[in-house]
Amino acid sequence: MAMSAFAVGLPCLQPLHSCAFLVSLDKYILPLGIWHVHTKFHLQGASYKVRWCVALFTLGLQRSARVSELQDSIRALAAQWQGVGFLLTAGLRILGILVGAWVLIAIAQRAIRGLRVRIASRLDDREAVKRAETLGRVFRYLAAAVISALAVMLVLSELGVSVAPILGAAGVVGLAVGFGAQSLVKDYFTGFFLLLENQIRQGDVVKLGEHAGLVEEVTLRYVRLRDYDGHVHFVPNGSITTVVNMARGHAQAVVDVGVGYGTDLDTVMALMQEVAAELRRDPAHAARILDDLEMAGVERWADSSVVLRARFRVAPLEQWTVRREYLRRLKNAFDRAGIEIPFPQITLHLAPPLVGSSSVPAPASLATLRG
Image (tube, rainbow, N blue to C red):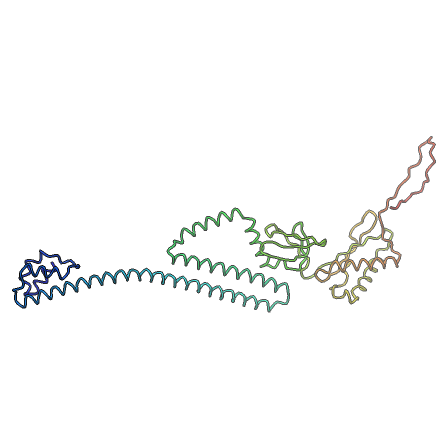
């Protein structure tokens, strides 16, 4: 059809129109085939115009074949470049995602660090500053984890990996881990709120259930205590139900003093107030005691003594030191005043001998045995 249209368009090729169906007009036709057609139809004797038209036709076919080959080559090269371009584009996008994630993590961590520094600058308590640093580390870690997870999902989507099945699988795995590691998750949540609410600080003396001691470390996972004997206790945060903190604001040094039943209680209480005032005037203990001795009065009647109770309001963690020093001085004052510190006593009543008994009659007086 292309040959027919070409022949119709050129009047000089009208004589060749009948032989157009005898030759193949494929794009790989060679000039030799054209000259074969030229010879077959005895064009040697044709006019100059016919020869010129045949030559132009042959040249057009040659150029058409070369253009077709060039187009095929261009298409193949374009396909190759298309694949390379896709890889380059995807690589540039992935690189942009990674760089953007790194920049966001840096900005978020710097913002959290700046906020922590601003808050810490307004705090006078060294332990509160440490708590702010611990919370700052936790928030920086959470920000980095969230941004990294989002970056990974975006990179997978750029690589053609479907993210939906991965998220579904991650949800199932997270559910299984949540059921299998409930205590671990509970430890982290409890530790986070212990730090956030400032219930425990490093350096406090606390009682956590059956464990008590000096707090050496507070993490999201556990609290490390050291008791008076030097034993170290690791208490998981998930097992903490109550916190008894003995180092907040102030403490009370409670003193129970037992005296004999025959002792004048008013004299004893006046002597206790005197010793307390002397202790507070001592420069070595003046900073520890925040207020005068508070006399509560008679606490109870024991088996061999009357127990008097009093207390000092002291600085945090100084209650034991003040109590020990006060008892030492009070013992010396009692000795100088002749006030007896009773010890366990038992009073025995001896029954009279039976009639007709050969035993020696016992005295009718009461015997008091001390031991």
